[in-house]
Length: 501
Image (tube, rainbow, N blue to C red; front, side, top):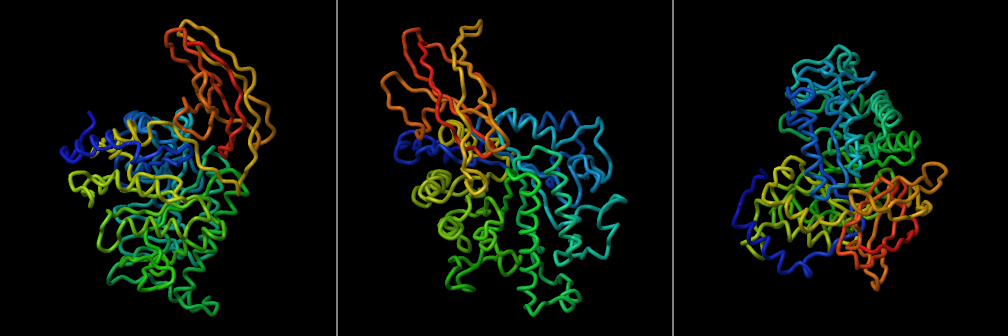
């Protein structure tokens, strides 16, 4: 059973949504609706193959009902692998011991790709580029990079970090990513907020010797940022040279710079800074087109004294619009805190209003999948019954491809023992830019205006070449339109079929 918290707040929230839905929110036709599935919280350790698959199946089924159309799946938390790799050892977060293959054998990444694509979801493989050991790991496999090349690793706060300044490390990470992209049908490669490590009081990241050898006339902070910039550009090129359609996304910490540090570009916040503390110049990557999408982690509540959510979503909307912008949402914190304008409700509705008001916000990624599946604060229920009730297409990325495929052919309605079914034929396509990968099915009343931008008319998005039609009373006439989508969700013109149901 899906659990709930803050029952009184949620009951009031739901009632208000039902009463004011037309004013509160309008569904979008194109929207990235993602969820992170992580392994470092230990949710899979010791489960075994069958139990882990059942766990993931349950999560995917519930997330599909909630309207999720993309999964960001953690496959490389510490220079290890939740997939078959000749370069890195099996992850302890999968089997309990690094270097030990799952038994019975399976490949979680390939399995997740198959399951997500079957459900019409994208699968983005989530890696941590430079972390080579987490605090909780006490044993490394004999083929782990930190044991093979200890000179390339810097110990820090119980972790091992691949030194970003070393070309060998940047090349190594790109080799690992090229291996994933070339062998697996992933839709994206995703990195999170770990570049240089988060600063810890009393700890020093000891890269002085290399800096003195290779400072290039730069301050140490600029030198570190340069090292990460070089890596991001190299990784982007690696991905797109291997498969041009695979999206490269980054999910940075939610503050770029504070206004007290940078009066021109900084946000009205007082927290840790990407640019100054993690040496990650996110805006440079976005504006230079080195990443295909950006998901800042805005995990705070509206009204937070140090990092106000409302301030930050407006800041990212203003400054990071050169690439598709999705907002990283902390579900637990959203349902925990009351709406400042209406304290009897939580902040879900207020945050989604802000999303809707921001012209450059193209989606949401939920932290994290399990709390959505468990329906914490009725968050999942409100997604499936209201916010994400209708399916959504992925946002366009014309900088990768902007040419639409051809429309489906030979639409026909056939009466089957299971009721009427609309069939069509896949159009011809040449190469990844022209091939139809999915189809959007719209339904309109007999005298209704045909408007493909009105998401309320979408019946479904499917990779099949058929869709089951509802039976009404045999006297209602509808017009069904089917369009084709390619890998980048470019949409064809519509093919039409009249049906009396």
